[in-house]
Length: 221
Image 1 (cartoon, rainbow, N blue to C red):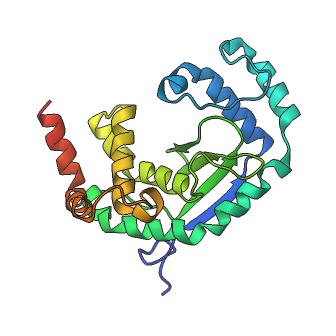
Image 2 (image 1 turned 90 degrees about the horizontal axis):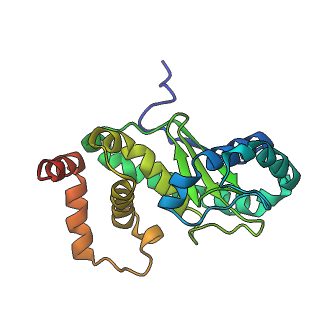
Image 3 (image 1 turned 45 degrees about the vertical axis):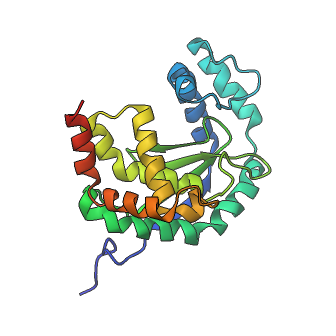
């Protein structure tokens, strides 16, 4: 009898795609509705040229301007750069398996990475386990390493149940995920070795019981 596709030894599938026109319109509309919240969290938000994002009544203008700017060739260089890093992204997901039992999360059988020209540098959608990352026509990303945003957002998806369980704020969950990334994936997030090996080993030991650490942190509040 054949093993199911979701067998623990099977590597997940990663699909890298450019945003469709409908994807971009939805993203721009979402950014308009959530603009105040987004700008409180980050100052780096890209929107269609000529769009007044301060007024939610401009949703129709958003669709018109997004359609006018849409160009399928815009994403090509970015797609090539992300696809070239897929082995590193897959390897990072396999590394996350060592914390699977301690954290209680389930790795997905597949992840979709969508390249957009709008919004913040990167985000994730928990409902469809999707990673969204902003690119430029030159294939540039907010983080210099093309693998960094996908790995960062996938880590977010892995610990989202802890974020919800303990009611972590935006800044708290970012500190949590950034701490995991720089500890577990130094070659991606700490190439200049700002964290010593001694400190890294100490952090790794802590990560093996991460939910307990968060629980203790909230008990002390």
